[in-house]
Image 1 (cartoon, rainbow, N blue to C red):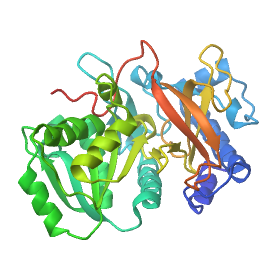
Image 2: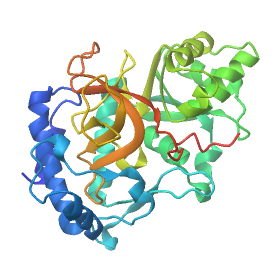
Image 3: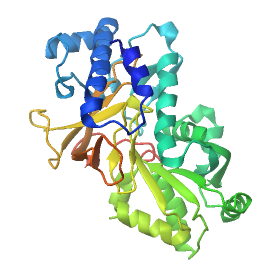
Image 4: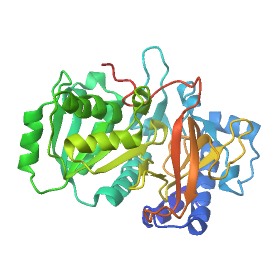
Length: 360
């Protein structure tokens, strides 16, 4: 099976509808094909592949070769001709830090959009919703300062309509603009998007400080990134949700986990607080001492698998995040597949993230 056949077959499946026994052989076939493709078309990947892994197809998902995600900060890895590149994505990075470069062709870019749309559709429904962005319009207005925040806002805006921004350009909350937006779309579900720390600092804390409240009960909040800064203030996910609901009424909150090196293949948090792998992706947790796969309940390094990367060898990446598998196929939300929890960045790893790079 070619990598395109595997992706096409998986695109016909529900985003979270395949159990492990059905999903694994389909996912493995696609990832094996991608491994062979990248070894053939990317010299850097082929050199690593031949030195560290056998050339024969991997018999299991756990045996698939993987690259450390940091490698993309130091090497130019792509499996298509330069003339086929339509977009170059870069990871977040604070001053002085190197950034990853991810090269996309039309096929990979289109697949990112399709997969992200299918994942989001499972959580917010198939229709585009009125969208409130907890950020300022200047973030997307100045393309000379194109950032990971800009990319995140523009990417999730595909699922919204009549987009409004909750913050002024000085990052202060415009209560009047938000209230006008809510009144205009009264009785309708609303899509609210923002990076975690910005939602915390400029919406939640801004309202708490002034003893204010906004009527956002119809809102569905999608947020990600920036948890490290909240943890420094001793705020966990449950505390974040409780206090947010107290000042906005928002009851539906979904965190997401992902990285630019596998854009589109995000892991959404379900109603029970668990991150889920879709049919187009999976996670393996590995022992940091010998990289052996770990069973549910044992913390280790998170390996991310995705069928999306065609133009660069990013289909099997070892992250710098620590996590733990919680289970497979039996989450109370009813979604099939692997579900897990992220514990944080490993010690001494470079800190990065869409809203971690935001300077107050």
